[in-house]
Length: 352
Length: 251
Ligand SMILES: Nc1ncnc2c1ncn2[C@@H]1O[C@H](COP(=O)(O)OP(=O)(O)O)[C@@H](O)[C@H]1O
Ligand SMILES: [Mg+2]
Image 1 (tube, each protein chain N blue to C red):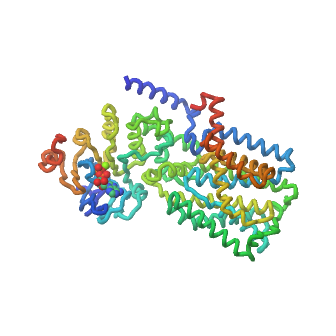
Image 2: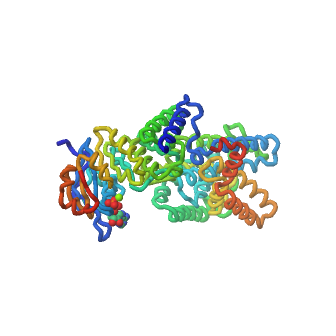
Image 3: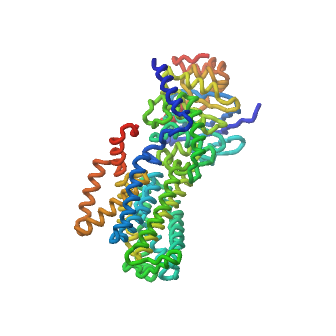
């Protein structure tokens, strides 16, 4: 009886699958690609929010630029932590290095062209990623966490001491940025900054979405899921992880560079441990291993922080703690997990 | 005699005072089906781990297709065609069954570095994955996460992944263990249909299966080769009989 059942269900699926390629069931669900329904909903909401801010939110353009920067940073960490399963509590080192690269290039070398500045920042952060990644990836778990923190502390202290170059605790003031394409100057309302960061964000998101759907991106998920199995199918796991470490570092560097360019200032807190922690919180808040979760998490966190620190500058960490506790306890898969559940409730069929 | 595709010379492994591989000289020729048997804890899985590079030997050499691979990492040996299954399921548990096979197909094709998706390629590779799943009766499970499958079915995913890698040498570590006896037919069917030039080393406790397929049998006891020969020779070997006393080894 069991056998006839099996045969029946087999032919049923077989027919469905051979139905000339119409909507093969979504694959990598809940993982690399996520449930595309939730992704689409979040993407639409974010685009709408961006447009609304652009059209009606003049006072929020500068904040909007900061949010977009945080989104890029969060994406870089999600690729590493959520997809490849590497833990880091020192990613601000790459963000900060990107910021300082642009700042130092502008203040000391007169390199003010913004787009090449982004590339330079990405390259220098990627290079540091290569150097530290080789060592970080030799360790696992807690050791890995410690090592990422160690490198971040080292660089923080170097930046603190190298006052003639970095400005030390005072930061680098007066970072001059040339107009984009020689045409669009950074204005005091932040319109150029906002559009510029949105454009970079768009490119980075497109890149990340394509990458996570590619064989390369899926292999990262494979490594996270089972490293030994990945080796046993012929993958050089160390190399693969090092590559994403470098990519992630470079993206974080680009995010940092954007901050330096749009705020025309670089301070030590771009390198600070607290920032490394915050970005990890953002990824967990949004839902690790889901790009759109990280992006949503970055928006929610940034707005939450902006509002609360304005209302209650001293105690906003209390409210942050409360928010996190609620999310972890009631939505362990992050905000995107909530969206998944909402979608499932609205479309019970698609949830299958 | 054809040149061996897989060979070990004086392979030795200690865990502290415990010797789990003792001076093992072993050869496997292309197109042969060999069984490795022995009591629990004899060192059979360890031997496979030594062959594949998961565990480094204390001394001795592993030669694959004429090359000394003793110092090569696991993945390099896989690229040379040495493929294994695990005694304890080692799968991508949160990915679907089809995705498990697709990952293997991608890596085998050297696509693992490809940073951009290609829908048409992906459709093709999916079809190929389903072909392999079909051979194992896993088609209906293709879209289910591995962890949702009963253990016996998960065992078959181990084999599906191995087949996706187009091995030259296939090492099967107790493939039928954990599969309900009503379902061993699937395993038998797969074993019957393996490519004729493939070299297979199977670790198996099911003597019916061993004697049905093996052209040669190696008996391992406490890390050392006790006997090696045709099924007839092994079945009539007094030392082997002594080890298997009561377990009823038969031809
Ligand atoms: N990593 C290890 N450290 C110490 N002892 C081990 C290790 N792996 C296996 N062993 C021991 O080696 C012996 C052989 O194990 P194994 O190769 O799994 O045997 P088999 O597959 O024949 O049942 C067992 O006694 C086992 O406890
Ligand atoms: Mg074993």
